[in-house]
Length: 279
Image (cartoon, rainbow, N blue to C red; front, side):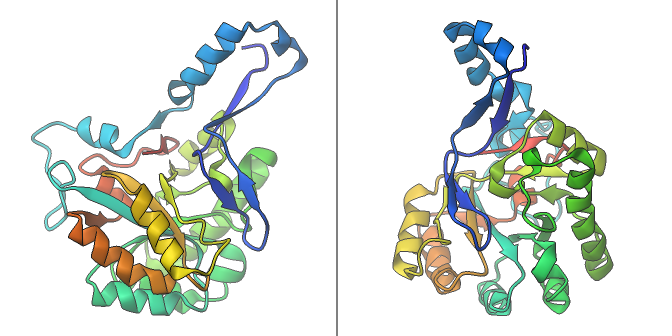
């Protein structure tokens, strides 16, 4: 492909914890010198086909690909029939996380938590245990929030394994989902995720709660963007986010949504290691 390399990420902005917001585009292309020989038409075609090049699928497509007679787990929501949206939180656990867990428990609601290792899992192990005990889904968000497309394969493996192992020790279950920092992944990262048994989960809704403490604004941004089969990205570490959660849950239910975990959104299919799931 003459050096063509396409990065897949959601058309949103995300940030490194403690850093500045980074703009993302649906596809980011880096070209080596020979790529100048590519015609504009070929380049456009390459961008259009990025999903197939990188094994990108939507939760709905994955779910609908399951046999019609395949059932979801007993007691689980069947998102083939229900109007579902997945609620996810990145970058924790942190000091405020137990308050969020209290809210979720009161609302009889579960979420998917993408946990960061350094300063989080290693600092709040009891919170990780409680997340799992309460029935939430635990996933991997790397050790230090390194951008995986910018580091060597051995470093990618270390970023993930340093979180996988302690989560498994704390909860008795090894994560099968991960979220690449800034939503940035490529074929090399996907290959490693496949080897490590991790599906890559992106998102369709972001409140940009890393840049505001305005609870009303966070709520509005989530509600304005939410559509069926979407994945909501929030953070359980920022001041304005947790107070917004009760209102978000209440309004989504009022609009007919069933709030689920990522795995429930994909069921009865199972998340496929290495694959990128993007609504």
